[in-house]
Image (cartoon, rainbow, N blue to C red; front, side, top):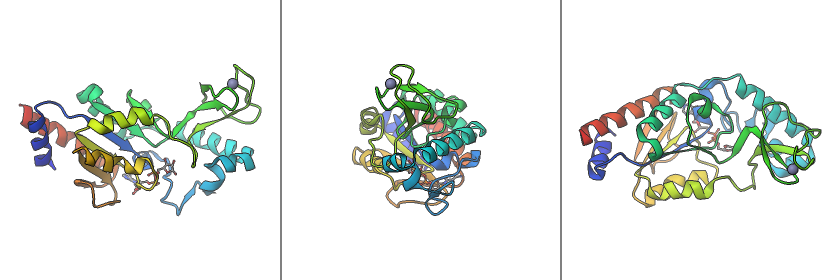
Length: 247
Ligand code: APR
Ligand code: ZN
């Protein structure tokens, strides 16, 4: 991969624009369970019951409780070396890095990432069912939690299945012009995120997958191994390539 990256940076004659997409695998070593490593159960709940509008209508108390537990669990976990490596990448590239995450935890922020698109929402936010306003929310949420601006009840600010992910225009712009696309710790089964690397590849980007095992043979490069090892290794390799290509 080093030689590919040297060739890319040399051809560009500048720092590359990079889009990074992270999934649950980047938070796994921080102790946050992934979605599909336990045969489709999320913390022993069927995804249908806790991550769909239908599930919320059917049993709001279960859904409130589920995200209250996820919020508490995430707060007790710490960012890991993979999150910190992406902070280093942001310091190297500045606005040239677009970090998109499917994760709803705040480990990227707590590691120090600042430009971040939470396309599936955030545990530490709640949204009003009435006026749709979004509020920071780190405590428990339930049907007594009221919107401070219109008094309606609140829901978790999480994108459930059949709902539209957030920030899609802000994601599609860098995706169209990135030189390198990196997918880290995602099973690549949930769209539209799962299609990002193919759209990046169509516009000529070099695509890299970092995972415990390949999810597709269509990436240009694959770095195997736990994110806490392979993401720092990717950043070191990119820095070497920039050094050699731009001097
Ligand atoms: N290092 C790198 N990759 C890892 C690690 C690790 N330590 N542990 C697990 N992985 C990989 C797994 O191999 C798998 O490919 O992380 C991926 C986790 O896949 P999923 O559990 O499907 O999580 P994700 O891809 O983020 O799910 C996408 O689906 O349920 C919805 O909205 C939810 O955002 C989520 C979306
Ligand atoms: Zn409101």
